[in-house]
Image (cartoon, rainbow, N blue to C red; front, side):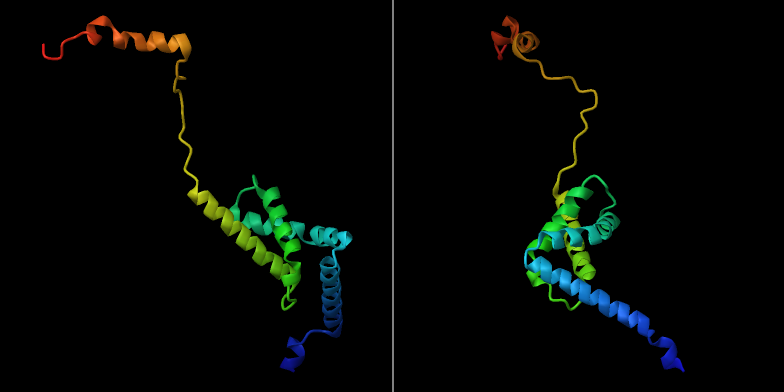
Length: 146
């Protein structure tokens, strides 16, 4: 009886096989360079990719660029997809690699220095006027010994 409770119903097996066949066909069409297949792959997985990236990074600022980066990597590497796992699993791994790369890049960037209320550097004649008191005749011709 335990076996009957843990096995999948025939309808679920049929749906899984159909989904696997459809996914294999989509991958085959992408490998053949079919533009519609790339569009279909993108539409089917873009939300999942964006959600995974956001979950790792927690930042929406670069999300569109990173989603695009994931799909460019996937499209260029579709020939390396072996089909041992689901396509979504393969895309998830690409997401993680892209997100970790972005986190490494962030950690290498120096933190911005807040300027606050710093005054701008004087230029031209204003610079001369500001610096001129430091070069008064008294300081320039002063005898250091005496």
